[in-house]
Image (cartoon, rainbow, N blue to C red; front, side, top):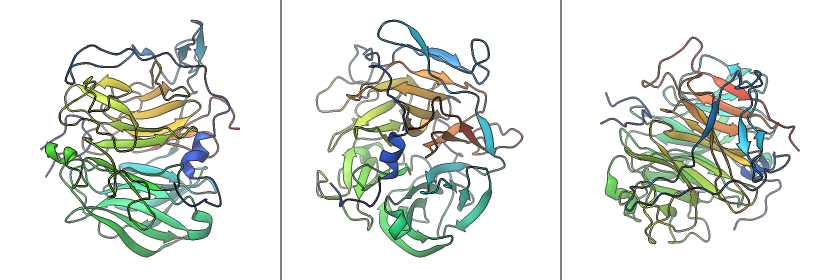
Length: 408
């Protein structure tokens, strides 16, 4: 079974922390939010036959569309065009093997997972790479392997890091102590369904201090609507893997009706967003809310049915196959696999999405992870060695996208 997104190789309220959570800290990198974004333009079909995609602005390349500045444009409420896109990315690291996820340690170094090799890497802002360890029990195959990674918001005191991996029998979440080496391995969640496709795998701490995980429905469509099964969901948990206080159903499940969520991010107001693979018609960015049903498999795209949450934004599947997601500088940044571009989507204070801009279209191939670094840059990983891309000299790599403005 293969996935038309080309997402992988075909089969063969919490206690106060001592510091801000990584999600909230990243959100506050923005020096200033943009003016209120343009309202989205909704389609008028039923049952998933409608999109909700404002016409994108002209794609901004790394060489730029005007004068070689590398800047894109955004239409402000007064109709004026303003430069918003960052300058040319630079390659920070080369020669990686399907870097799947990126999470930052307090000092600015990043932990990066490699899906196929099961290596957890530590990469400095200067591009130095060293192996933090090889994760035990990973069974890589299809779209499974070593996937997400997250750093505890209390890392200064507990030294905990978390990984999401595919084992021989399931997908699971494992906690380690990391103080220069990995130790004190503890499996905190088991029984997440695994498959050749749609394994989910994203991990992130929310501004509430709890750990969120995305899971896929493994190609078994009905699983997404079954609240007693962990597949096709967004999960919310404590650092010990227990259901977090306030979860809507008394279980790990935070939201359901998902096909294959690949990216999670929060803005500084606490709005939660997720990127999601559609099937044949629409990929999505959703505003994720407690206990909501996001419609899969009954709806793909905008259904206009009150029992299901409609997406904020949709794309045709050839434009996106959105994977990693970050929030910085008043916008969401979504890495596209099949679309081979970085999408910038402005959002306003109410969580509405404005007009998207495509950056670096086709210039770096498939893009998978995107993360906001403490210094205001964005780290973006390529995924050209995952069996669906066309590897280039030096792939896979981590790209560093400079900040458009200095961090606050």
